[in-house]
Each structure stands twice: as C-alpha cells, then as structure tokens.
Image (cartoon, rainbow, N blue to C red; front, side):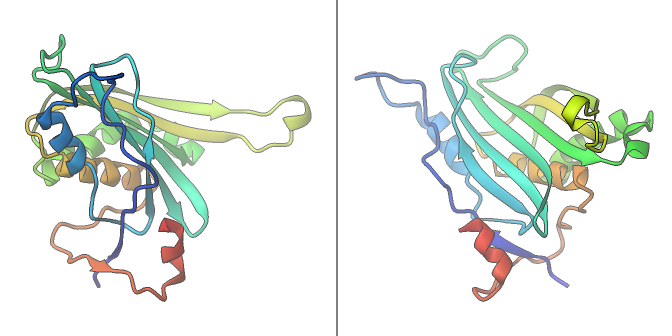
Length: 215
C-alpha cells in the first residue's frame, strides 16, 4: 500500500541572505540551493516550517525546522541549516555546508544501548546514500540525555532523549535529496520507517482530517 504524502506549505519566507540596505542580492547559486530545500510534498507524519537563519556562521544562510508526529504526539524535532560562503571555509570542502539537528524521545533501554551512537549515525549516512545525496567532510555527535524532575516537578516522569548534531558539505546545489534524507533521519529517530524508494507517493484526499495539520 502506498504511503500518502501532503504538500509542504511554507509558513513564512525563507531567510535568503544576511544583506542590509542596498547591498547586492544573494548569489544565484545560493538562491537555487534555497529553492531546492522547499519540497513539493512531505510525509504526513512530518510538519515543516521556515526558521530564522543564523546570523554569524556564513555570509548567507537559510533554515527550516520539522516535527514528526504520530496522531497528536510529537515524537521528534529537528533543524536543517544551509550555509553558503563563496570563498568556502576551513573544513567545508566547497562553498556549501549543511548543519542538521535532530532530537527524539526514546525509551531508557534504547538510550542505554552502547551501539545507539553508531546506529544513529548510520541512519544519517545511509539516508544520504539512499537519496543519492552526494556529500563530503561529514562529522557530528550523538548525545543521550536523561531529564529528572525535582522540587515541585519531582513527580514528573524521567525522560530520555537522543540528540544528533551533524554537518556535511553537499556536492551539488540541488539539496532536495539532502532534505529527504534529513526527514528520513527524523522518522527513524521517532521509530517510524522511512518511505521506501520504490513505493509511490500519493497525495492526501482533501477530506482527510489529518491533512489539517499542514494548513
């Protein structure tokens, strides 16, 4: 059975560049890359939104955020930031750099598994490979966080989370495959299998109540 997808409707204008006054417009390469970060449709479990771009990491930047839902429960959140410096920066291996962040709630027995770090990192690299998103100079960290309540929050349940932070240099301006891989990564962190590449994507019907979340 085909897994439905829903259109991505931006909630605001993408941050285009850190320019002021009458400074020249962003380079065409950056503008094309930003446009490719706007998927025509996304999995129904994923809600995308535009985020303010960071101001000091590169001459030009754009950012999107995402949440993964099952019913009304938010299972994972993430950010994907595009940085562009025509002159490149140390360690980038090119003018573009993508910076990703994913956080997901997980069961304590999963976060205590010593293999969680390598497995979580493989979710990212295998997703990039599956979407033919060529890249270089990838690096990142996987963190397990435990939160306990004290005082008037002593009765709150203990929560455990996985955080993955990564960056890599895309080899092309078209970032659609990288965005798709990042979405797959969030689904995997949330315990939802990614959409198989050989499964056709069907649009949601307008009378589907779950489609209201994306409006």
